[in-house]
Amino acid sequence: MAFRKQGRGLLAAFALAGLCSASAAADTGSIEARIDAAADAVESKVIAWRRDIHQHPELGYQEVRTAALVAEHLKSLGYEVKTGVGRTGVVAVLRGGRFGPVVALRADMDALPVKEEVDVPFASRVMATWRGREVPVMHACGHDAHVAILMGVAEVLASLRADLPGTVKLLFQPAEEGSGDGSPSGAALMLRDGAMADPKPDAIFGLHVTSGLNVGSIALRPAGLMASSDGLRIEIKGSQTHGAMPWAGVDPIVTAAQVVLALQTIPSRQIDVTRSPVVVTIGSINGGNRGNIIPDKVVMEGTIRTHDESIRTKVHEKVKEVAELTARAAGAEATVRIARGYPVTYNDPSLTAWASASLGRAAGADKTHESPPVMGAEDFSLLAKEAPGVFFFLGVTPADKRPGTGMGGAAPNHSPRFFVDESGLKLGVRALSRLAVDFLGRSP
Image 1 (cartoon, rainbow, N blue to C red):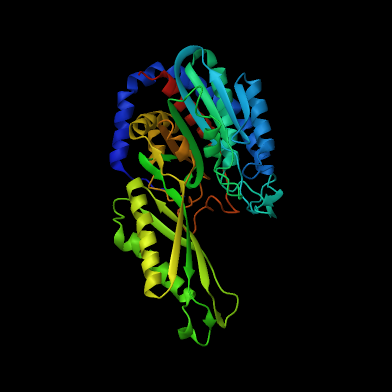
Image 2 (image 1 turned 45 degrees about the vertical axis):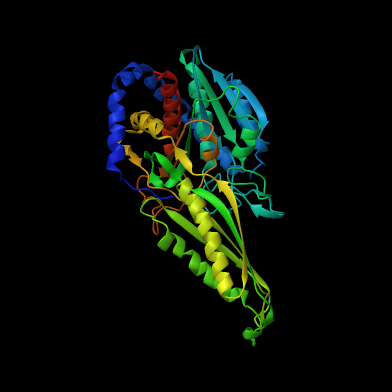
């Protein structure tokens, strides 16, 4: 995930939001100082939790140890805790000393089937079962940092309980990266189990660490922050023949190659990408078993990414049309299946403008930037359909290194070399704590 400073219009809106909340900021100065002091006090614990979780990563719906660690900590702080939500998720509620709204904060807990290549004393050596085989496991996307940060936030907010005008709800979610067995995502199963009900949040906030920003920086944007993610499967059916006599059959391999190229004209020639970015990727092609036999069929799998729901629908229609007509022109037949996955991670525009003031006070206005659209996907998007949401990025690349903006930058999320500078975790604690307290305390 890569970012850059941009978006003067949004930053101007952020500045306006900050001016509009200037009097509120003055009123909350004391509690902000208490948040900062509590974040300082809990920082060493957050780092220790992160290292422990990093050394003991667990794949989607296998987060038993992590969930137990979280639940024990939350219970010790006086939270009302439910476990087994969405299989291995944890939901905790802290009721403040005064009546008010409900705010939710979310962290995902699962790791990835990746072999760690980072040279740290707490590197993972864990093996686990993924799709029926033993694989190495690593927190290559930083969810260990998310869990540790939210555990720290839980402690900060518990220390402020008597002064909180409302209720805090914490969601520690499994399987954001999927389970490998076709199960719905962790957010979907937590919703099924009532994670966003009783009490129902009035807003939800979440963060994601990224190599695309240096430590101390935050990035967000209103509306579409991260893309929708839909699975694509295309089966090309031809007619098998000898490789020396292609005219005696219909070649699905040549047809598949033509379909791959034709699909790329959708984002490049059929969609206005100045309005919203689109990606159509084929990542897998399988067909045939001998070099001198033209097979009956080829199966291709890929992903479709968009940032707008209307464009998402149009791209689905175009993919089906282009694949079917290209195959028909070659005398073959294409069967297209699109599995709708995560929707666009949508930041409520008015809530984002408001939240930017809180984040700006936590990180500094010069460290709070507008993010470009990101083509990765997040199932936080499902939670943000249940209540207005804001999702933001937190930098974890060391200040003296180039962030992961391409070749030569820091290793990206999902890389076996993904590295988290732990000095950036405290800002995550401060940012989420301030968002929660500011939201509960803001005027209706």
